[in-house]
Image (cartoon, rainbow, N blue to C red; front, side, top):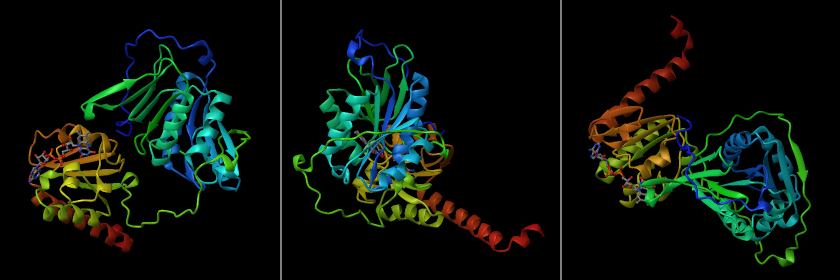
Length: 372
Ligand SMILES: Cc1cc2nc3c(=O)[nH]c(=O)nc-3n(C[C@H](O)[C@H](O)[C@H](O)COP(=O)(O)OP(=O)(O)OC[C@H]3O[C@@H](n4cnc5c(N)ncnc54)[C@H](O)[C@@H]3O)c2cc1C
């Protein structure tokens, strides 16, 4: 089930467009390695995992692209680029690249692309990745498919097949770029599975010297204030999530979701109607216009399983749906169907979990008793 989100793109009928001759020399798959002062965004590793598959299908190299300042932070990340699957890493360091800013990063990335000519360039659909991808694509006059949920290679003409929901999530479409290079795509965190980290994989490093001039950059960094809100929900990276939907009926019932989540150490998620009703903060919305999650366990209480919710959570290892309606769409893809009223099943589930967890704690505290 781990690849469920990576909606397999199928070869499609394409209009007959021939790639202009000067783009045919573009080779290789690149992944932009996003980081903040040396702290990498995990989406970069997820994209290296997918990039590895694409590069192997094409029989080309996979490269990570690291831009940053001249301190030690960038150098410390290079090893990880190899460990997560890249064959080589392009590194461009310059004091002007110390903090992320659109203009110098776009200058740096477009220079690298024009110099080394990759056929595919992938970025995370994060605040930084989205900002950079748009300006790199417009500067290079190439196509960009945003928020993809599936990436594949057309075995016919080796073009990138970028799949994503369209028409408000009611259809999936596959987009191909037939006329320009590189083919660019962004992918949200947690859409692709995290690849295994293999330390000490061989990696070539290409250091590229950029000529950047601070006086030519229109934005200035005055200060760097890390976002330290400790209470910010970390939904995309949570192992356990209990989510509530409109079926809960009223805010008091949403408290049942929060209580179960507390008991099992889970994050709280919500469907869009639950967020709109003010039962949960907007950061907790799961789905097409919310967060994409990939927990070990996702409990959906009073959530119908509409496609716009499904695209955000179907990468979970195990899904349990609680719904009055045995025909609810959630049961088409849930591993466990709990058919009944949320107001009865949520407290019952919480009690059952609490009993099991207490028993497990006792066993851990008195291991000798277990063997008696
Ligand atoms: C462009 C676009 C983007 C969207 N993005 C998102 C998104 O990011 N996330 C998202 O969630 N939605 C999103 N939506 C909305 C989505 O289409 C659905 O409307 C929404 O997911 C439905 O939420 P729900 O399941 O909570 O409510 P409903 O569809 O109303 O389902 C409620 C469910 O609860 C069940 N129920 C009712 N009472 C009980 C009870 N007492 N006990 C047990 N079960 C009960 C019902 O049988 C029903 O299945 C988007 C829509 C559009 C058009």
